[in-house]
Length: 331
Image (cartoon, rainbow, N blue to C red; front, side, top):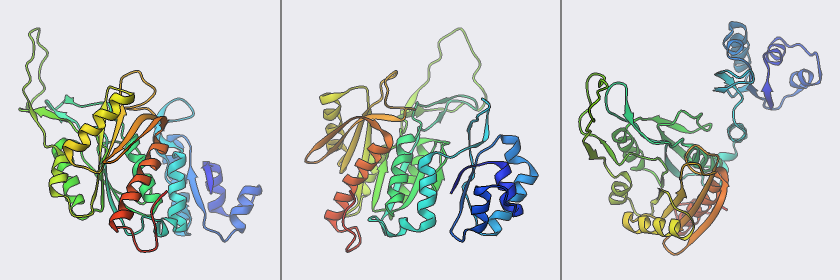
């Protein structure tokens, strides 16, 4: 694996030039090679670099294309090195470990991001959800062997080898999730779906006026409740509760939602503005609530929260016989 791979290194590798230890190693090895490019946007888009990338692909080299984001020069664009978990996911897929994990044969659906409900062609009603926690869950499930469908309104780079369905509104989210959930063993509703949408969407931009603007809002479909009504025997349902509370109160709110929705697990997390956890952050202050217990995780990295949640999902799958014989449970 070469991460980051510069334009110079990619050019040398494609041309068969051995000018240093790294390029000599790449030319001498018969092992699978993963190249993770990182460079300025104009360099990445240059025809010479793209020709070299295409040549390496034809030779069987694995390429993990760069992401769009903040670059070393301070500007924004395509060329940013992928996140470590995305690189690990790509490596795992190359070596085939995902096909042999404890969740092999399990079909999972994960929803991500916050929906956008249009008010007019320019404005929308939304929330601050980034989708980071859901993407971490999708990555963890895939890393353990599950076949994952990610229904998302987020623009994050998706984990490798995951089926992605892009949506924007609550109605689109509902349609995609319910369709994918029909054959799924696990459904994780981690998206922050709007509870209400404008009753009327203006065909043209609403003009600013000194008088107050009244907007009528109507409820959207409760996707989690609908999943509960449609669930198959043995299917594991996981919901999320974004709350502005902590500690005992957070756990109690999570348990209330668990009981009212009739799901197997609820992840209740504190999303108060200004906190080190919640929307847009890399950490979460969460509690995982099940029928018989609750586990307070405290302030933890969202990848660690994902691992704990998938452990709990594995326990449920193991108890209802969904996991393949001999695979055991995750954890």
